[in-house]
Image (tube, one colour):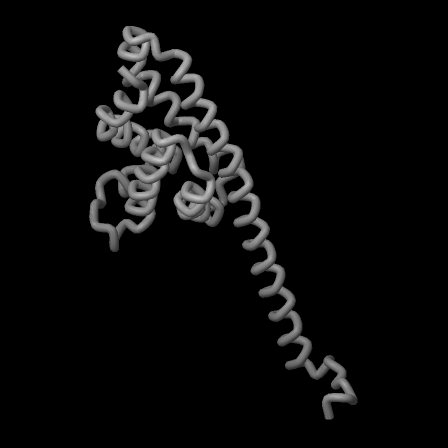
Amino acid sequence: MKLENLLSQKKSIVLKKWFYLILETYPADTSRFLKKEKNPFANPVGHTISKEMEALYEELIRGMDYDKVSPFLDNIIRIRAIQNFSPSRAIAFVFLLKKVIRDELGKEIKENRLFEKLVEFESRVDELALLSFDIYMKCREKLYEIRANEVRNRSFRLLERANLVLQDPKSE
């Protein structure tokens, strides 16, 4: 048996457990809501995480094309960056997949002597985590840039209201 086949066969249970572990990274009240609410409009965070992690899982099984996984990761990481997760907590969800696979498929992996393939798969998961970190940092940089622009614009408007801004003679 090939590891890819085993991962595909157990996809639903792996995704379900991975999803619940991801939701456990949120505060208890938020986690309960995200688990309970199935409506994508009432729970866009849970819906996005669920949808994108399934796409990530499929791509990891296939071998992982960076161009394909980046948008899926971006949608999850963007949420976690806005929610002020620390970098380590924001990307920790990627590593949770390794735990789920070992817990759920460990016996079959051992019986079918798929350790070598498991190591290859886990290396792809590690690469995914590194890519996640890059995406997280870009999101945080953009957030800081937006906040800095807001402060600058707010300060300028206050100075204008107080008539403390000098007019540029060229603009008159």
